[in-house]
Length: 88
Image (cartoon, rainbow, N blue to C red; front, side):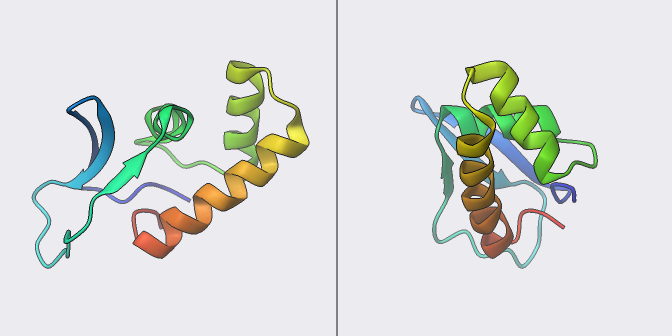
């Protein structure tokens, strides 16, 4: 999978927010807000193809969390990203 072109992670008032830049017909009545670990993952996979397992490995390496917990968190995060249409 890959983050769709045009979606950018910004820091707004101390919050990590995904915005669509230069996108037409994108409904941003709500912003996609990310916590620190989700923003870390976004930064690491942005601009390249990645898998859920890539994201799990990133969490395990960076946050010293066990693989099972990281896999559950990644699954939940990818559900949100897919629902919001920011990955393909």
